Length: 150
Image (tube, rainbow, N blue to C red):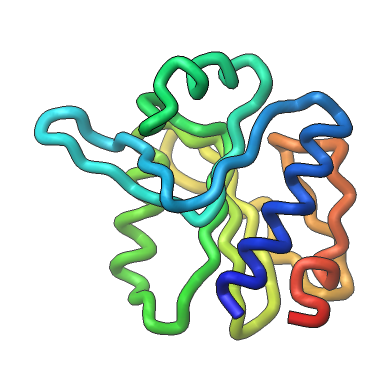
């Protein structure tokens, strides 16, 4: 179920970003450096790099040495809140501007926006709603499309 959702989001975002020439979406396993010495990385399920920074991905294809614009985590039932909070802290510290938390149990997506003092929730979007993203404002993604048939 987890992989189906990741694959579906990957296809949706690839199509959207390509159609609008906005950037690139990358899927795990792909390291994002959160600390250089000693090296520590994260591997979000999906990450988006907007067009202005895509050349940096091409220059260092083995791992991302800068903050992606958007990170998507598909939450596993076994993942603890402590683990999730550590990931969110890392993403905030390196400057990720937006994070989506895809909850398989509730079939919702929470969109978090980077703010100086921490994450702020843009909203928790349910199957009957359309996801809102500040990083991808033209995206018109009904949440039901993420989960249907999975």
